[in-house]
Image (cartoon, rainbow, N blue to C red; front, side, top):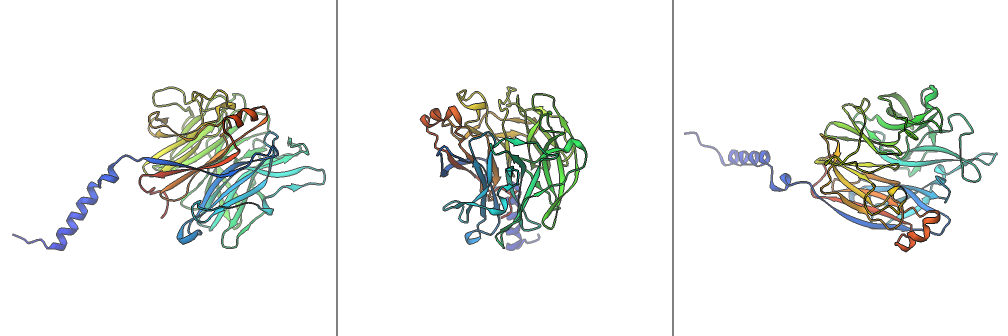
Length: 412
């Protein structure tokens, strides 16, 4: 009979344990929500708005990431925004610096009085270049804050690169799109975008010949060349001649597939792709019991964990008829990736309704243990007194999703 050495036996036992997995690995993925208020501002002149976070690996304290939140002032005229400011934390939110206005990301004023701004910005880390990239849409404003289409291609996608080693931002540049008139209005705005393994970017767009026609949606592949982005190609073009068409798509990669969620005035839509460019037909978002999700005329965004895909959204049917477009509270629900439905069981409120809207938000992985949803309370017009009565303060929230086990999609 052949003897087995002690070392060989230990290796065998370790392999068996690894193959079977431990109880923690086999347990269902869960999460806790920790809601924090970073800012409060509501003086009737402006609100801090559109906060979206991105992590810069290793640039924080003691090996932590530095987290940068881009945000801007909503100037109490519909979709009238200041230049970009940033909030920064090097210790995972124990302390914050800012908001700090960034001169390179401010308005550019023309002699006519027109102010050229960039709004609806989403930042993201690009490891291959070692830069943070902020992507949004150029907007031209009149002196009264009205959005102008006074020049051809006045509504285009803009970007800036941040070098954390030099603490330096580039000035806004326009992403040059193909000459086809259908791209005269072409925005990657309020959009989650992706960095591919080869360093290229997948940017979801809504676009059209002008700002009045129903918009279409597609995903474009771009590359980073130095401090510039270059358009390479785009995939499936989705059209829907319903009210304003399709807008504000967001993209995520999970389980080897790509998922796209799309806003429409009447209902939200979802689709899936093998390559991030070419997608299956759109289907309306529903719960897993077949009922409509109830999210409409506002954004939805994604959170991906290695063990589950999640959607963050607002919806009807939450005792929230007093909220404009039912844009509060803010929910998170797990997605059935086979049926492209949100699982009703386990739906969780991330940010409660306090009389203010919560529709313009960001969602991002920060570390392997935490993902953050960032949002500011919208307190507008005639709804202001009621919002104050219900507790709204113009708060900027960070909703920390603390996972029950590490997210293998995030590099340690």
